[in-house]
Length: 427
Image 1 (cartoon, rainbow, N blue to C red):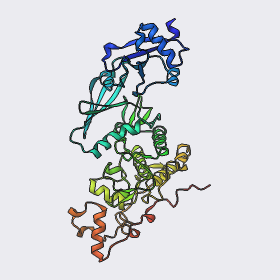
Image 2: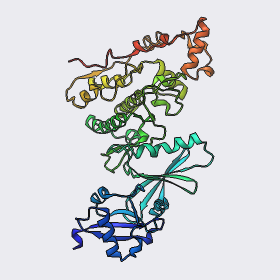
Image 3: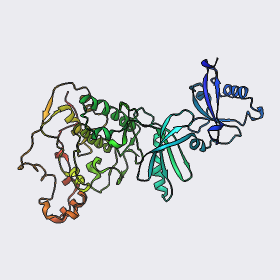
Image 4: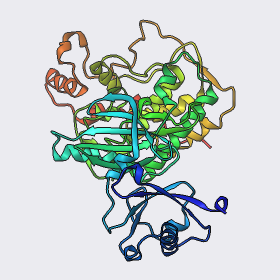
């Protein structure tokens, strides 16, 4: 009886959806040979084709006995009757475009629907013309990472292929939209809601860091909700991701200004590490709680503030002390002292149900810049042309000329700027 069988959808390799057919297989069909036998028996195929037939899964790989035993009902397989390799036109024919979701940069994101299963997907389409070899590598790296980073809080990649001069990345459709929309809404997020959402972001980043991958562009726009109820969080956009090998030093020009850490503002080479993501997580958590950026303004001002100004919290409201410690730990200006993704400060905040709050008082005009002078070698900013204040790196150059000597890195050590003494918690 068919109700006791699995329904397998076969798609003829390189053809459109009109070529597909269904095959109901027995529960004991657990080897490739048994699957072929049922296929030939039910569809009465020419026996001369038996050795030529190839069956592929959704990744375009030939299946084996293990794959057959793990088949689920309504799964799509691709059938090559002539021994040809997997044809990427299968992917092109498999989805129909419903509408454009958004466009920006060099890519557009489309809403697609599987012509057989009716499942909705997100299709990222990138035109490949006029790109250098290095640029093409950077564009394709997202598919490389997402094909191996399988986690419930990382967007699921279904397939990646090129057709007619375009790269298509087919991923799960996140119908709940971006975290940005929730943050900018009038809705006040409760402490428990923030914990619930941020914990999932934390778990996703913890996973990619365990694989020595750095996202390098964490921000609310790249954090989506899979469901309309906004309960299932996934991280997207691994286009500028990299490997944290502990050895390479680099200058990263990519990223989003308001989420970059101090070490990326100088223009100098720095140690690429997972601490880049930790700082961005701190900015995200700050935004979720207070709905303002910790350092705001135009790009040049923000970079200067990130590098030189101490972190401040909003005044006149109650803030959980464990939250303050966590954000301070993530937004430690000295990367060597910044906490990592496994620090106990995360769990301390998640599990904190106490009424241990702190209220910051508004500072007077006299102490508005108290402490700022010891961080910046420039005594009177008004004497320096605003046109030249493009980055903290240029500030350092100008300061060196002003005092007649070159400042060393020691002059710009951020040790004393940390609002916390240590990332270790007291027992």
